[in-house]
Length: 419
Image 1 (cartoon, rainbow, N blue to C red):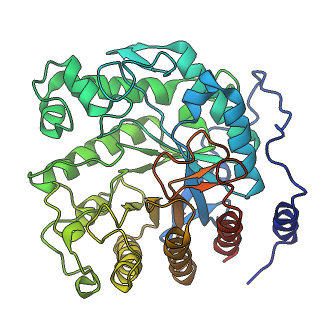
Image 2: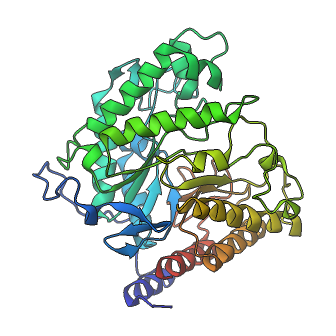
């Protein structure tokens, strides 16, 4: 294994407290002429031989979700600075955050004036909220970060398909994918939003989003489902949307953003390793196998929340065996399609305790063993802001200060990036 002395020095300094990531990095964010040439392959992460590649080298990563950053650029920019500095100190190269916030009728936006809604009405966009998104991308880019950006949520948080359905007059708007997919208005509004964002020029970098190498990938929807319906319906919609995105932004990757569920327990999975096969027979109207085979989808994507997927709230041999199988199976299916695999979210309800540490270290071990292409924890936080929002988060240096878990995570980041 090749050892990077800079990473070791960084880890040493963090370990002994010589780096304090709550000190903001001084950066200039004035609009400048871009020195980048749109379409220059060496600047973009690409797919070759079933792997993420950057400028001719394999690009593996272990990063984090940080969905809330554009909102906090409005309400408390210091949170953004602290968070990005923590990511830089950990040598994280990829983060995933929301590139949407729709309306006031769904989720928790209706009663909180601090929320930073982007689309206030169909096709009506809040420029200041978009500037906040611009700024987070610019700050991250200057720290060497790359972004994975979903366009919409399946769930009600930050509007989601619920908001589009509400605007279109649906009687039951929440998580009603059938209405969303079959309504002419909702589909037009979604495509209009995608087009607006891809063609937007960042007010700080001067680079159009569609030409921005720091945007590693777009995702069509966060955790899309179509419960009780033929998974081919969602598969076909994903393909149509991926074709549309690529017609505007051909140099950026496109993923589904799905959880990785399947339908009718396909034999491609190591079925005997799952004590509960819900995730393989979920009847959620989606199939990882079908979706990953879409030519315009660049990589396989799945999430992993064993406590929510029917495997219990205790760390057992059954849970850890299913975890290993889930990651290995999804990677194998993606590789059979000539694509890499991204574990786009993973988490376990706990508070920096032994259960969380056991699950994560086991997950990181299998990721290193099989040379997982990419993974993103839900989530590393730098202060009290989101430390306890879900459980299973790693909080450092603020909040609980999960120092031991943070050090283990850094070790994993180094190991996966150096393989």
